[in-house]
Image (cartoon, rainbow, N blue to C red):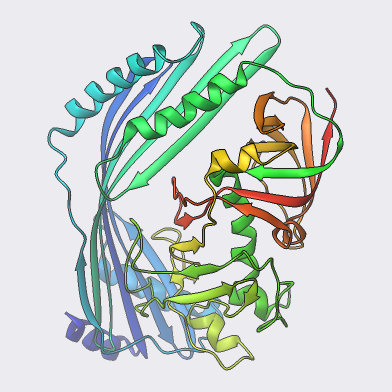
Length: 434
């Protein structure tokens, strides 16, 4: 197979060729407003070529039954518009990975039956006749093959099971919407996910007024992922090269609270894989240990541009078939604490519990945020009193993560490849118009 690429490279006068093939089959069953909406099967395939031509990258991709030679020729032609390549494609790797393909039975029949069962289950556990239930079940089979003209071959086959739930209720002066999702490479525990949403919905039925002041804020594992995403951005070699990361000159220094440790473990969880989308082995990477910055992460090009004399850490990943690899972390694990979520809640005299924000905790890399709380609860004397409305939190993410009060003892992935606990943080101002 690689001999074909060597021959093609020589024939077309190219220094190097990389071929990326992808096949994805998805099976979806969805319910909207308590009713079966659709069952759908989709099959997608495609190919992407990256070449090095006269010292420059070239890239082109195509979906379906595209002509490989034409796509490769297009990549060569487009190379004059791409930046100079500072790298060589990896060589000498032959790896084939096939993750355990759990049995799914009759997919659509099982999904439909489970959907009706879960809606009945929910109805018996919520005190409302007007709530609408949305459910979605997805099974995805994928295969990727990366090979290049330097004798590299990597293939991976994976099956993922996903489930999402959304409860929504419109009342005369109120609107409640609670969402959650989970993805695993095994059969899912639907009830665990549903019970969590039911618990939040039942808490939401009672309102509470919250003071406008500085107070501890407890971020659920879902909400805390937004905080961690900013940390991931600050750790990117691309941001370091541009001197836009606040930690560009902080290797070996304390940057966060000593309770915070972040590790990339490529062998962990449902997204586990040993090779990135450039053919580089993904490293077990200790990023932050007890608050001290130990490593940044790189793909091939950002490592070559770095002034720190580093190599790729195996973090070149494509967001889609038609995209070039960019630095991205895989399976980030935030070290948990020792207390359960319930124990943390009981320890709070007065604070805010945040599960969802409007638009997410989006911010620039400076870490400054000011966001409205979509789903949040007042905690008073160790109890969840009720849902808050018209409430905003503001502050700086890095400052808050430098003032960690507690981390819960369990880490959850939900729909991302970040495994993190619930986080009780100091450093935010809560403002309410209630």
